[in-house]
Image 1 (spheres, rainbow, N blue to C red):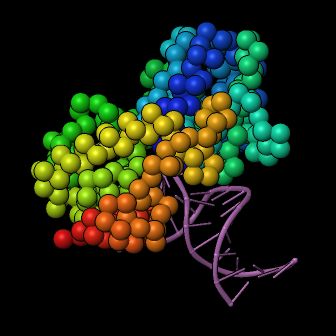
Image 2 (cartoon, helix red, strand yellow):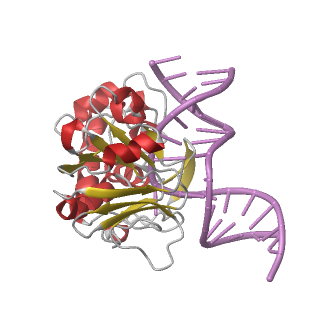
Amino acid sequence: MPELPEVQTIVSDLAPLLMGARIIKVQVWDPLLVRFPGAEDFNRRLSGGIIRTMTRRGKYIVVGLDQGLTWLVHLRMTGRLLTKLEEDERHLRAQFTLDNGICLSYCDLRRFGDMWAFFPGEEEHLGGFRTLGPEPLSEEFSQDWLLQAFARRKAPVKALLLNQSIVAGLGNIYVDEALFVAGIHPGRQGHSLTEEECGKLAAAVKEVIQKAISSRGTTFRDYRSGLGTVGEYQQLLQVYGRKGEECTHCGTLLDCMRIGGRTSVYCPRCQKQK
DNA sequence: CCGTAGACCTGTGTGC
DNA sequence: TGCACACAGGTCTACG
């Protein structure tokens, strides 16, 4: 569910509330949730720990505790970290009770979400976290970066932008929005993009992500911030979820195609296949 | 290594 | 109303 802007909003909301708090109780009810170490060790490692830092990397939430312990959280499609529960919450999977009166609840309809508690040297257990590409708002993510990442790649540019080792944090919404802003068809093969197009695309990704963070993310269905609020970027979406509606630039009806198993909405006139 | 389909899970919306 | 099927802000894995 959440992409970079949504995860950033959650972290920005929760960090001031959790900083310096001690975890006094860990309860995990869903056996699918903890990826590393085992359920018992996970509880033991986090229990009694004091939260020192809370940051974001790609779509991961990174919580730093003492002795080099890191608590890593990925919300996947429908995960939520909340300080207040809805009255009829049916998908509570775990709770973390803090010594400052806050109880952090983890809810997840589809149960795809993952958590890890690891020390330095245990990185081999972290899956995709180890191979994340640059942050889209970093200097490293640029025209030149895309040019080399797309070289000799035959996959559609849409699939390459969803690849977290090329750029970290983009998902289906913001890739479609960025490709529209850059005027590039989602089905174009990576290697076919010119230097100029890579420059436009890098700039479009930065613009879309920056605006989405300012808008506290997009709530299309499930997403809620750490405080339970919805985002506002859905009002600014130009293509995602708008198949069959008019393009905001030229009025042509937006079309859609399936790429890498994901729906891609685009304007057939503003984003030519060439 | 690269690229794509299927799997993981639960729920909602749509069409017959 | 009931049922089947497609689809959902994400990755992994298996296979050609």
